[in-house]
Image (cartoon, rainbow, N blue to C red; front, top):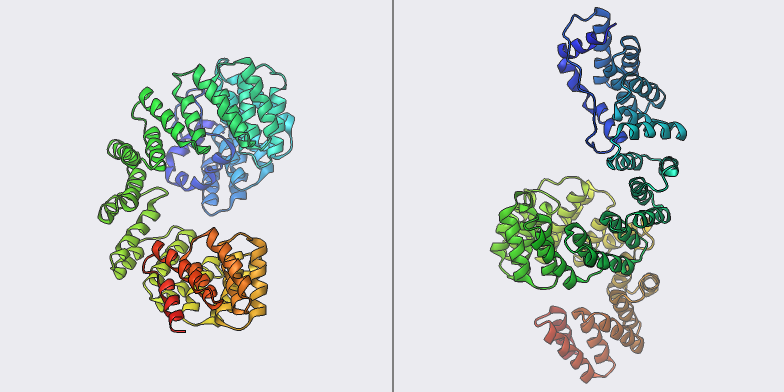
Amino acid sequence: MEGSQIRALMVIVPVLLTGCASPMAARDALTPEPVAMPVPAPKPVITSAVEPEVMYQVLVAEVAMQRGQYDLAIQNYLELGRSTRDVRMAERAARVAVYAHDNENALEAAKLWVELDTVNIEARQVLTALYIRNGQLEDAQRQLEEVLALSPADDENGFMLIAGLLGRQQDKQAALQVMQRLIAGRPNDPAALMAFSHLAVRTGALDLAEDAIKRVVNLQPKRVDALVQQARILTMRGKAAEALALLEVAVKQHPKDADLRTAYARLLVDAKQFDKALDQFKIVNKQAPNQPEILFALGMVAVQLERVDEGEKYLLELNRGNKAYVAESAYYLGRIAEEYRKDPDAAIKWYTQVDRGESALEAQIRIAYLIAQKGELNQARAQLHTITPRGPAQALRIFLVEGQMLRDAGRNQEALEIFNAGLEELPDNTDLLYSRAMVAEKLDKLDLMEDDLKRILIREPDNADALNALGYTLADRTRRYDDALGYIQRAMELRPDSHFVLDSMGWLQYRLGNYSEAARYLRRALEANPDSEIAAHLTEVLWVMGDQQGARMVWKQALDASPGNKFLLEVMDKLDHK
């Protein structure tokens, strides 16, 4: 059969071909992002007559693939490739076999594909990947040598393309070995060494990565991308100070290189040297104005430094001048309006612009919170109910937010119902169990609270929050002090400096009548965090110990810091009536 007959059939049955999208996704599993390479011009489609048996076999393969009968599709495509010598049938057989995890037929089909189209780089990449999966590393190396031979002599992209291909393989060590074989004969080739360094980073071989990049820098001391890669590796190895020093010198040597300066600025941000980072981003903005990534960085770093007006200016410029960044910049402009300007209406207007991206869900939640803060809780809940969650994580977030809103409003029974609904959808979720336990305690449903916290501890025995919450509640609401002590001691082993746990231990000691011990723990807790509830506990302990002056001093300091706090007002009212 002639290959032109197959091409003719491709024109006749295009609808069938569109049903093969999923198996064709195997392309991504085998090859890196496309890089411009010289490839032969496509042959013209010939619409000559197709022999009936060929048409029948193609139709069988297409229908089989649509029905998920991949073994039958592979068999027919491979037979067509052998009999007609049509490269498209070989390619199709290889891709479907890869998708179906049929490595044996995938390897045979890929070999045929390469045989029929020897200058096709993608075919050789697919064959390389299959050789690696099969443990045939020498054969894989030979294919990559052919890929390099097909690349222009002065084009460094060939090595980076290979590094990308190898980095996608599941067997990282085998991929690294193939690359090592490939560069063994090129010890002084900067392009080969650079690509190897990138692959070694992806496989976690940081020693090899660092050694390779040092060789690149020795060969080409002024090569900026090598210096950036060297700094990256140093950072990954916990040597951030060395990385910063390296790039600081490099920036002085190459002051006009905006990419280098940007890398230096980002490293300064990672090191929390925000003032210096802002200065560097400003220089980049002058060298290459209006780059959206730089404007965004300027805005975020300025806000981090509490230079809100300056940060807002950059974000406004980005919002007005770059459509791709409208949503992201609007989210942070909303945060500025909410947190710094105390202007909820302006914040809501910004958040409504956030219709895509990672911040979209959070923006919708912020709108609901701001509506709730106005006292319009039902409208806030309606806002939450307009959100269509994308997956369990977002559904969980919405349940928790709505439940917390109801708790904050004192509508604990409704909050309990929300957490019940959440647990029906996401059974045994730790966050939902903990939240339901807290609201159950408020509703005096101590059996439910204890059951939920114990369910958490069965799955997560070292969950310090659950241990502490259970221990504190048993100490505060029951006389099961021995049980409470066991839970709180375990929480203290896990978090010895937690003010929450110290407060729980102090309150338990108070309930046990060990007032001096109670005061000691509570003072430690208050030093760790000047929390109103801790201050209320210490006030009560000191009062009972007879130190009313000390109690009033602790109480007044806490009330000055948190006027109108219910814990503080309640404790003094209780003590005044004793």
